[in-house]
Image (cartoon, rainbow, N blue to C red; front, side, top):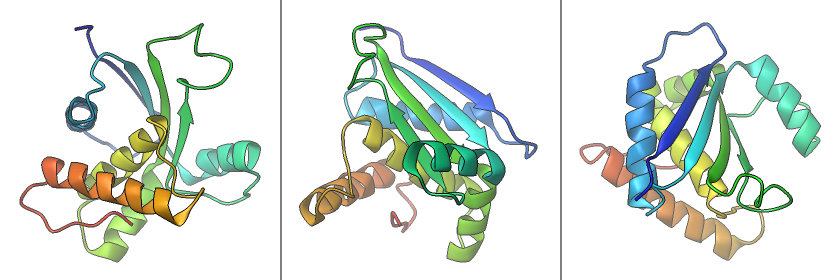
Length: 154
């Protein structure tokens, strides 16, 4: 089995534990049977994620997580082992954690799962059936990551 490479680029000011983020990412990928890939995680702020959201989705506002899969499209032959990039807004994650009365790391777990599922081909915007499939898989993974918590994907 190939070595799992997790690249983390913290581009914002909040101190975060990249070791914990790396561990959670590895757990998610292992649970999905995807431990032979490289993945890039970018932790950013609302301003940068808003720019990305506008450029790639045509939505001019911040979001919590964006995923850029590399297993489909024109780059699959160039980077066959690269799963893709997950970009998370630390500001939005903190606000959503506060609103849901959960910890920042619990919200980061939810967003990592959501982003990685998108990299794996899951999509909640194509149909209700696909949304249910993605949410079910997300909850299954969340229970593995946070077994003693009663968390939901939202």
